[in-house]
Amino acid sequence: ASVGAGAEAVIITCAVTGAIHTPTMSPHLPITPDQIAADALAAAEAGAAILHLHARNPETGQPDQTPEAFARFLPRIKQNTDAVVNITTGGSPYMRVEERVRPADTFKPEVASLNMGSMNFGLYHLVDRYKEFKFEWERQHLEATRDLVFRNTFKDIEFILQTCYDNGTRFEFECYDISHLYNLAHFADRGLVKPPFFVQSVFGLLGGIGTHPEDVIHMKRTADRLFGRDFRWSVLGAGASQLRIAAQAAAMGGNIRVGLEDSLWAGKGRLATSNADQVRLARQLVEGLGKRLATPAEAREILSLKG
Ligand SMILES: C[C@H](N)CC(=O)CC(=O)O
Ligand SMILES: [Zn+2]
Image (cartoon, rainbow, N blue to C red):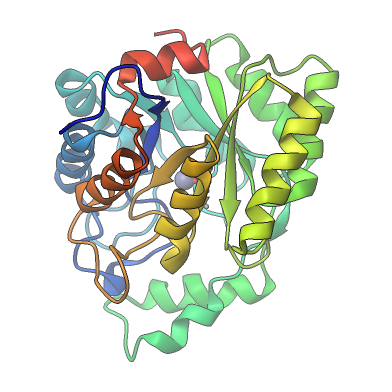
């Protein structure tokens, strides 16, 4: 029996492909424009109200932050769903902010991601899981993170805010640690960002905060203290922690992000066969708590989007 309309509505964001995982890691990782469009639409059909999008080179799967790459799937997605489009400004952690902001500035989406601090961004520990890689760039992409800083200086963040300011785009504030919440509070104090703040707490990325239940409580408690009622909380758990973090946060009144950008798994040891696979698991979780999924229209209202 589906949960009544009065039940609390939970916004599901689906991050379809990202720039972290590589083709060898899962045959289900969408790479080509057709795959990204089809998986995004199926995720929306399964209940995702927001689609967080990156683009890739269709041959090699390498992250591609050119507006042309996004143009190969965006119109198809917009024509076939009213889900909210959220375009990355993170791109890949190897890119400079000028390159990273271009798609959001070109397509002026309702939502764009904004990473709230510089950090170590560790993926090198994943190399040993794979005997060999289809493409040489994959090993390089992972190993080089041993000496990589994902750069998001105050100047970089300000640059993205100013670039997108007139586009009416609002942000998914990616907070990988407690300090990132304080950085957001700093920009709020300066009046460069307006409430309600869509805070996406990121747990379990090497270089950021862990995935212990106390980490989740600490993030929520700090956000409550800094932003009071002016924020809408969402969480993502990297890798195997995805559903556990989602369950805890949903029980605490939070919203959820899933998708193959953040985790390739659908439960212990089972590779997700699609993004919709994870959205369905998140839905079961939410409805199991006596809550229901927010529609795209409700997400627009809750997040005060331009529509
Ligand atoms: C952990 C995620 N990769 C956060 C993210 O989605 C960053 C972005 O695209 O700006
Ligand atoms: Zn992303």
